[in-house]
Image (cartoon, rainbow, N blue to C red; front, side):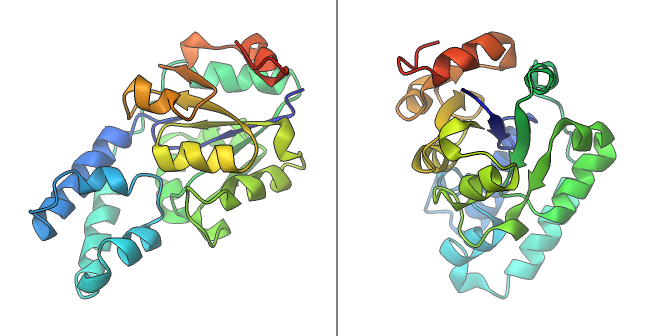
Length: 217
């Protein structure tokens, strides 16, 4: 039985991944013009993780990149993925606990709250990068999310769009619903139990079916 639903933020709740791909694509081409597609490798990572793994040799440039990112996020648009608000509200009516599990930090979330103050009322918990010591694909963030809402991971469903995020949910022992908002459907399907284009394609009944031993929607 489903008791909790845990959601990534970018590419799952908000259609922001194309914007981040554009930003990090620009940074990667600026500093690593000989490594095309590097921006796709860092999806699902915290800013600290990105700096430590990709820009470790450019510590003098990191404050400037952070300044650019902060300015970029202040001007981002936060458009909901179609059907997500209605879907979350339907889960909550059925007594399902809900949480955001994101690699974004608190300043980023303040931008979200300014654009959509109602977000806080949609979730029982909102976890950000400050709550974790490990980045996706490590399962820590989803395990902490399940603990925060008081639900065993086996009774949770995680919603993700990036490879690192999908792997994180799977490693946490949860059912995985993948959104094909960032990556091709075939790529998402290699990890997810179910793949959707947006939340107009799924309902509470489908999630209940997913939790059954057959696991088929």
